[in-house]
Image 1 (tube, one colour):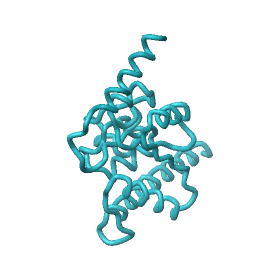
Image 2 (cartoon, one colour; image 1 turned 60 degrees about the vertical axis):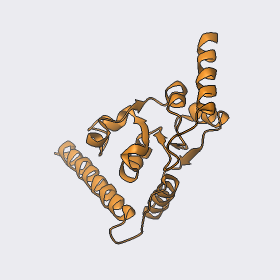
Image 3 (cartoon, one colour; image 1 turned 30 degrees about the horizontal axis):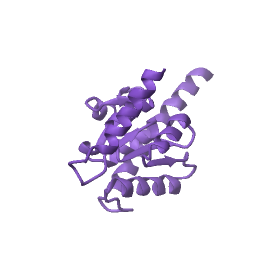
Amino acid sequence: AALRLFALLCAALLAALTVRADAGAPRVVSLNLCTDQLLLQLADRAQIASVTWMARDAALSQFAAQAQDIPVNHGLLEEILPLRPDLVLGGSYAARHSVALLRKFNLRVMELDMPRTFDEVAQQTLAVAAALGQRAQRGGNGGLAVAHRQYHVGIDAALAQVSAQQQGLLL
């Protein structure tokens, strides 16, 4: 345990002393499937340091094909610290221990609540896009319009699948 703590502290010290070569857009790690989906839709590939292991699972992730070449994490501090992210995206209901520890290491963590309305989805999408340094617009051909279209297609497909399963159970 002491060796693990020492290694963790060394990694944190190295991360703090290392000067980043790319002063542009932030490098981001995602801690849950919902934030994986937002990140994969809104970020440039070079910005994505890691997504969760679930992002690669086509049964769970609408963007599994996009995530195949992206490093994965399991929400563990020792996986995230060496990546030296500028931003960590997570939900307010998961990976609570990791989020608290990441904040102790002065990492910027953006926690997203579970949206309850489409307006909240839009607000969160805009907030994440802004944090990523991406442009998102409420209409036209902007990133938010594309993200919303993809989001709704995914919801419609999931609802259709649930409806078909329920009909099968009733027959």
